[in-house]
Length: 248
Image (cartoon, rainbow, N blue to C red):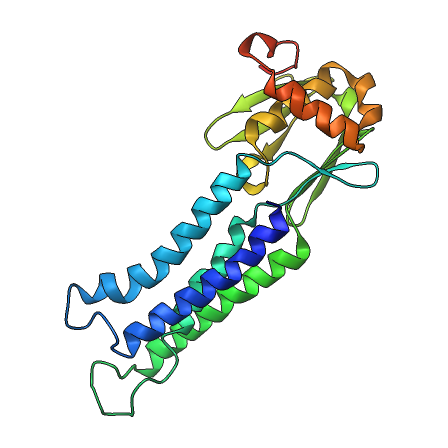
């Protein structure tokens, strides 16, 4: 399943969150059974959100690279689309479900209504913005790696990378660059936060490590054959290959 397909699955999940919240506000379930907070907020929000995030996690563990015109693309994680589910859940509170004064518990004061409206719309706007920006993401081409953050853009040539350093919490690939140490203390580094990317972390570490150790193979980046070879190489990788792949 592709990153774009997963983003679109957030739409029915958001609609479900909206309908469940609306159903609670209308009194179709919940008010007379169990804690109101759990039924009114946690259930309508958590059921669709947890289901969506589990699907994203499952697909991410199977994701590799997207082959484009002469480059490999690691797209942004679709997990950010969860903001739409959160926003839709809040917007379900804004739909009038009773006449003013019918039930004092259903009437919302202006402040609560405003907060729900602002947060709900903000969640939807954040999702739309990230969907069209498609950031952050990673580009691998024959010359090097381009790390596209939300705003900044950092390009590193393959021959500038001395080795990789694995950081597990949070999951990060740290590119340790060649050249003299900064102020004689440490070498310059560039971090790639894996949690923001739609890719299996072990696959990305091994793929980058291969091109660091064998930069002459980078000429084949951007081809379907090379993508298939990378998948096969990583599937057959073992702990004893880590030094060969330039990972420390």
